[in-house]
Length: 78
Image 1 (tube, helix red, strand yellow):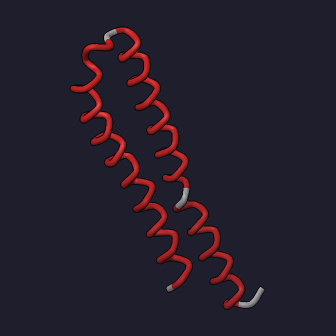
Image 2 (tube, rainbow, N blue to C red):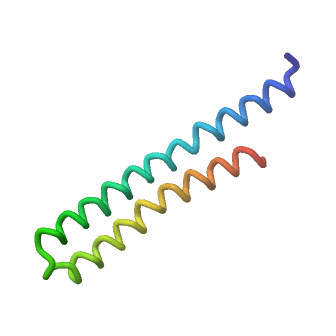
Image 3 (cartoon, helix red, strand yellow):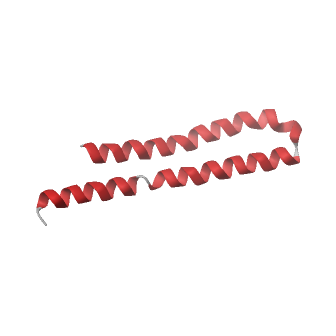
């Protein structure tokens, strides 16, 4: 295998490994909204106060996925 092919292979593997964070973010968002639905089922009156916290948690969890995507794109295109 020539060095150029090895470098391309390493970039592809690195970008693939960098996107593992997207799967983790998906699991985190699922847990977040699952817990929200469960807690609203137990106490519907607290929905409005909890919803703000859920949206903040969603945004922070989704940021991890976006960072992983940016890192993967930087690895691929540099």
